[in-house]
Length: 453
Ligand SMILES: Cc1ncc(COP(=O)(O)O)c(C=O)c1O
Image (cartoon, rainbow, N blue to C red; front, side, top):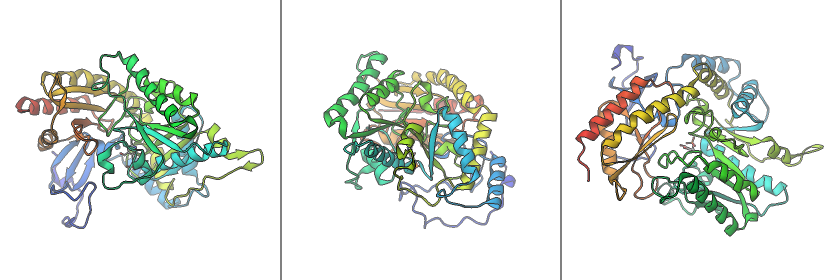
């Protein structure tokens, strides 16, 4: 535990009763975090926790990277703000760096959050089709169980009814297909057959809807917040073929999967697919400053141009998108990721994690363990044969106990009825093998004592 004398001085914490917290109000008193270093966070009472969720799945380089703070300071002194209706060097340099990571030329539109990055993707997709004389294409298809953001358009694309309840009706023109759920839905098919089956499901939906009405399909490479649903290896490639066959743009939401989380720079890079649009946020700055980006394939951008120059404009602006300080922060963050080889580290530690985590199958209520890079979901069930999901209270009890033992884990809460039963692990990519071992030991300890069902 962190020695309290190392904590920066701070006046007596103010009562936070004036904050409306995310997912609040609740009766639970939120942790007040005062200090963080590496993978550890420390609260106002000096109690430390291993943050196995990297904040909200985002602090990929870990806490306390002073180099990032210095770059932010220097940028604030040199140019604290200018909008991207003009240009500035940090945004130019970052767009070039993102393209290096994407390994294919894209045009980058910057904004502030993952939700906004997806909103912009939807607008670009619709306008692109209109400019191609296909203005009938307006529908956006996504998957049930996936989360794409909290704003009304991104929430419309979200396939989690509990996140939408009481906010509907949402935007028209959004519909959903079944997610690939290899644990619950494959029903005896081989992974190859099931990947094809899911892609055919999308294709049928496009045909039933009328392909000339469909603008885009949006998906995460792995459904993250909806329960770490890792698709069969052939799934994304088959989906890309379907989209191409029907003139539907493929938007890949890399808000969580991007920046090394799954053991590749971007999650889609486990395949040879080149997405039409890639959205990103979180790990882009490791959470050190707010920033997101919508990367659009050059060929799509060029439809907005003609021989004489601009043909039609994207009528979209945001005050803080591509903020120079956030761009400087992102650049330093990506430099650190490269220097520490964190993407490769994520892949290797993922292999280690999977091997070690398999020992948790010793407990009858561990139904399925899904790992890719430093992303893990443990699906808890009452009964392994029937796969009846463990009740939410029991899942929460595991998290509470882990917290009491100094480990902060997550769960796929508030998603779809009955399936909020997946414990989630998504730590900073600098986590060590020893820290992974500690987390697994704590889980063993909790599971050994659990009386479930
Ligand atoms: C896959 C995915 N897309 C989009 C978002 C929305 O990002 P933000 O919270 O930055 O708006 C999230 C947030 O968790 C996400 O997980």
